[in-house]
Figure (cartoon, helix red, strand yellow):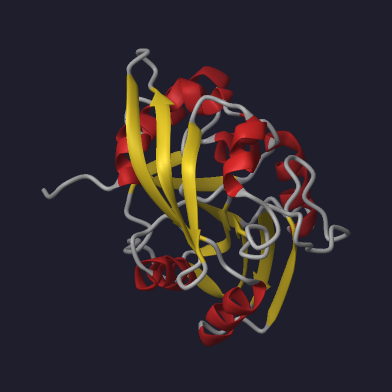
Length: 253
């Protein structure tokens, strides 16, 4: 196997610390929104892409939904399985690459929250492969709910200042935003679950709404709605603005 990518290195031995991050504290409210979007239909099969430590998958399973969670990180999945067992809920957790999922027409709904793989990949083509692979896993009539980085945000805000203000366990610094590629590159200091400090060079792609709309239209989605993603308080009332760090995308076909 070749050199690990930054996102693989980040999520090694990082389950407990990940669950303590500022941006992982909105699970219950986010699942409330998902349930509402699904009209509380417990018969729907849900795919959680980039499920991490299983926070959304476990919460939705606890509420009576059938959920399959996939992730590339063995350590994140191991923690997810322990958490599910401790709570007495049954979730199917699988190690998969989101660009090449082993499902075809199996799910009614896909969720991909808190940058679940997309948009962490090295190239735009790889990020698009995730959208394509998730779409292939869905039934002909399905809903795809995901969040991604809002490309309008760094045009009006310093990413370095934003990250410094949020606190948390992993702290990016020296962030450079490239207007030609809409990629943010920088260095991140991370402390893993054993207290080891490591520095990671990372790269994330920020998207503008029209790009996301175009991708999804190409993939056959007829109804595409984009909103501002507020931590723990997803809502169709939140019009996307330049002040939203993430956008919430709801696509239907």
